[in-house]
Image (cartoon, rainbow, N blue to C red):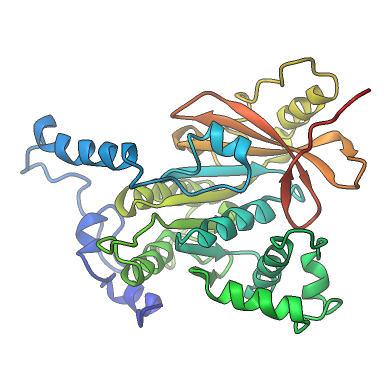
Length: 357
């Protein structure tokens, strides 16, 4: 990406342009002692010194010069204030609920609007990630039936067919970058170096700059901060999550972290989804679906947004698509809410309103 070697940068501590080391003093390059968290010789900036930057940000957003990352589901975008704003966001879900599919759909949609995307896959290989994106691109053509990504990945659908070849060309034009991280070894240092390389390729000073999206899939597979360190999984996850917030702040990025739900914490999600089967006019309260991530501790309480995927106990709709609920269980800039979706195994769609006689 832009001729920048992230691995070499990680080893040397030279993390690219614009003095990124100076701006991210909390995590040192490998082999160096951690600096003090604060420079006590300097006075904290006054409110007067901080107000110009804050006002400039608000003006850009008020004037429409700076917008959130768009989302493919209008109801969810409305709940989140127009889309996914820069910040740290956590997506929770039990195994098999479609967390990766949802994250890739967000990435695909954002890239289609010109937002650079860094997708760090700690579980899937590049070929599978590409197959999933190709399935999304094929499905983006109105009227075209769904092509499940597994058919492409397993050689049951021709990737050189005319429609697939055209979709591949469209995908190649999107600013999506995929890192195939090593499970249990990929650390926050790798994320920082790779994101800095992305920033060098899409400089913030550019008139065409749009906020980047960083997806880490998923938290339970992150490695220790420094090679050779013996960190408990809970500590690794905590560092990765809190550093995700730091990356969002320093780079103006939307950072989406995927997290599995612990088996011992699955009951609240089951109760939430079960409530839909007999709900009245109002959906069940999603605010209780915070703090359910496996080994995640309290990191979700520090997130700007917590999203939780839940299966509806009614199973599938009349078209054979799985009925799902996406709960916005925590939102700093608004109130908890939820939206109904259907999942065809490759992508999510808004659930059509049921009309009864």
